[in-house]
Image (cartoon, rainbow, N blue to C red; front, side, top):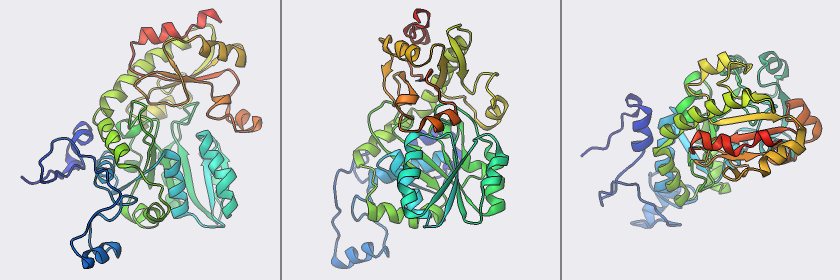
Length: 395
C-alpha cells in the first residue's frame, strides 16, 4: 500500500496524527524509535556517496535520524512549511537559525517583548560576533520601520509575547520584510500551528520550543525551525550538522506523541484560560489581566483576525506588588510552581524573578513586567479547581 502524502488537503487533526510517518518493513502502526548513533552502509562507495550528500539516506544521528525526521515532517505539515529542522531546545533553534543566517555587521530588529533567555542570547553572546540588535514595541509598526537600517537582515517577533501576551500585526511585518528584503521570523510557541500559521501569512521562518505545547506534558526539551527549503535547508541545517544542536531520537518520539493530541489540548486549555481570565478580571485583588481573549486586551480585534484561539497563557497584576504575588504563588497547593508552560498541568511563575529575572530593571519597566505580575499557564484540570487554588481572597 502506498504511503499517504497529500497533507495539504487534510485537516490539522489528521496531520497531527499521521503526517511524516514512513513505515518500515516491520509494518508498525506506531512510530518506532531509532536509538542508534550511526548507520551501517552496504559498501564503501555508498558510505562515500552519503557523506558527500550524493545519495539520500541515514549517516549519523547528529544530523540524520528516522525518528527525528518523522517529527520534522509532521511539524512541517502542520505549519505549512517545506522544511523543518529539529533541535535540542527552543533556544538551540534560535541560536542555530541566527548562526546560519546572520554575519558580523548584520542588524536585527526584534520585539522588545520576548522570552528572557532570547534577549540574553542576543545581547550577551551574539553581539560578541558583531551582530547588532534594536528592540522596539511589538505593537507599534512605525517603530519597526524607523529601526530598519541598511544593514538590517532580520525581523524577530514573538506573538503573543511572553509574558504580557502582546500581539504583533504579522501582515504588517510581512509587508515591511518584503519591502526591505528582510527575513521575517516568528516564535509561534504560545499559539502553535493549531491557532496561528505565520507561514501562511507570508512570514519566512517559524521557530518553536517543542518543550512547551508541542510536547504538552512537560517531559522533554526540544526545539524546531520551519520554513522554505532554501532558507533553512542549507546553511541553517549546516549549523546543526556541524555544530550538533541536535534533537535526540527519544525526545523526537515523545514530541510525535504530543503532536497527536495538540489540537484537542489547545482547544481545551484555551477554553479554560478564557474562563480563568474572565474570573480574574472581575476580582478586586487583581489590577489588570493580560489575555488576548478579553475585549479589554489592546490587540483584541487583531487577535481575533490573526489567531483562531486565544491560547492558554493568562498573566495578571496582583495588587500589592512582589510580596502579594509571592504570597499568592506560595499559597497554591494544586498548581505547579515552575517557569515551564504548555503542560497539561497548570503552572504558575513570577516573571520578574524567574523567566525575565536576568533583565535589568530598566528593561523590565520598559516592557511592563512589574513586581506584581503573575503568569499562569492553564492546564487541563477542572477550571473550578484552578480558581480555588488561586487564593486571591487571602491576600
